[in-house]
Every structure is written in structure tokens, then in C-alpha cells.
Amino acid sequence: MTVHASAKPLTDDDTCELPLLFGRVLDGRGGARVVDWKEAQRWSPGVEGEVLWIHLLRTHPGVQEWLETHCAIPEPTAELLTSDASRPRAFREGQTLVATLRGINFNPGAAPEDMLSLQLWSDGHRVVTLRRAPLQTPRLVADDLDGGDGPEDAGALITALTEHLIDRMSHAIVDMNAVIDDLEDETTENAPEETLDKIVTIRRNCLALKRHMSPQHEALMAISTGAPGWFEEHDRREIAESIARLRRYLDDLDISKESAVVLQDDIRARAAANSQRTQYVLAVVAGVFLPLTFITGLLGINVGDIPLSQQGSHGFWIIAGLCAAILGVEIILLRRLKWF
Image (cartoon, rainbow, N blue to C red):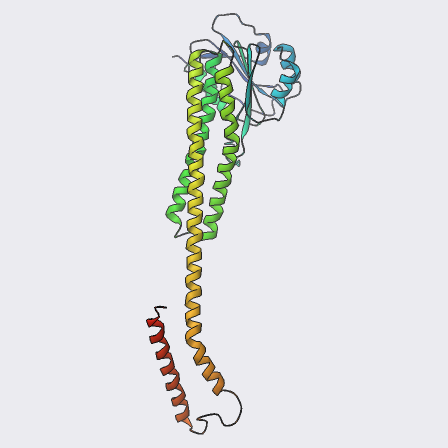
């Protein structure tokens, strides 16, 4: 494969004056050439094997109208492609495929559960993808095309986008599992409150990813079974493989969540055991000194006829010896009762 000299560094600037973030015309051999907004609007299927792919900023003014005018997309579908409705779904509309997919948000400062949506429309000759916030998946696929090792047609382009979305989901799951493993090794070093806070965050991330990824599984099933005829058999096999991987990742999420629950229960059980041990020691100490406290309190009251008050220093030593004897009897009794 050869690198096309016309390929330019990708830009994904939300401040651009045009809705086009980047455009490529696939040559049918794994490569592509760059097209600008003007050429993209004039493009029509000509050379056999060529496919136009344009990646648009859906929040740009006039995008919905352009989709309706230049791509002959029905108004409800164009509205869906440019709306904030991000629940994954896919359906066939005549000979076109419409889909909304989600990907992990790897933008700086974002949490894994902050999913990003990618809207997609294709008639087999043209592929239009739309996004709101920067998403790395389209840029990765465009890099493959610029390197001459990308998808060859519209179906392969859609499967490539899907594979990259799912691959990046796996990175988030692997990272969470690594954090859980580290926490298991550090439970005796970190403060329980700090560790429990991290576990709660992991559980929240697992639940959020599961909530977002489960509908994606249904969307991919809809693509696999209901895509138009230009979505070839090998593309359906690729989507089926992506569905299987997504199922494994959903299972991994369940395992991660259960591991976090087990670790959380273990930490709480250790904290409860430490608390009970401390309370037990305090109860034993209090039980040992209760009789001694009673005797010293009784003999310390300021009334007449206190026993041994007339014995001088001998009275003190007699009381001290009596307390020592009581303490010894208590210790022997507690040992026989196996309290300590």
C-alpha cells in the first residue's frame, strides 16, 4: 500500500466556519484522497469503487437542511441525525442505513461513562458521519485510509468505525480492572474510606457503561440483520464478530462490577471486625477495672468510720494489696472463661 501524497493532517476544530471536519473519497483499494467541502457537495458516484465519506459537525447551522437537500434524506431522519438523541439504534430506510452509535469519551477531563454519540447515514455510495464533541474513532479510520490500509467500500467503512468504537470500550474496561487489581493489593495500606470511594466510582462507571453499551448491542444486531444489499456478506460477518466482542465486554463489565462488590464487602467486613475487636478490648478493660473503681470510690467518700482510716500508711498498703488480689482473681476468671 502506498501513502497518498494528497492526504493532509486531520483537523477536528469545532470553531471551523464550515460543517465539514474532514472528507475522503475511498478508491476501493484501501486508500483515499482528501476532498474539501466544495468538492464534497459536487461529488456524485462516477468511478467504480469510489465512495464519498464526509465527517460533519452536526451542531453547525444548516446541516439538517443540507442533508435534506443534497442527500435527499427525509426530514425526520435528518432531524434524528442532527439531534441530541444519543441512544444507540439502527434501522434501514429504503436502500439507506441510518444508525446512532456511542463511543467512550477520551477527551481530557472526561469520565469513561461520558459517552459520545456518532450519527451515521449511508446509501452505499456515500457515507455521512456526524458528531457533536470530538471523537477519536473517525480520525483513526481516516488515518488508516491515508496510510493506504483502510476500508475499501461503504460497508467496510461502517464495520471499521464500529470496530474502533468497541476497541476503545475495551480500553476503559481494562483500565478499570487494573484499578481493581491495584486496590486489592493496597487494601491494607490505604485508608478504608479512600479505597471505598474509588470502588464506588468504579461501580458507577460499570453501571453507566453497561447502560450505554447494551443498546449498542441491539443497534449492531439491527445493522447485521437489516442492512441493505450493498452491505455485503463479509461486512455482516465482521459486524457479527463485533457483536460477539461486545458481548464479551458486557460480561467483563459484570465481572468488574462483582469484583468491586466483593472488594467493597471485604473492606467493610475488615473495618467491622477491627471495630468489634476494639470494642471487645474496651469492654474487657472496663470489666476488669469496674470492681477496683467501686472499691476506691467507696473508700474515698468523705464520711466518718471509713475502714482502715485510722491505720495510717498501713491502711493504704492494705487497700492496695486488696485491689491487687481482686485484679488477680479477675484475670484468672477471665482466662478460664477464655475472654482473652
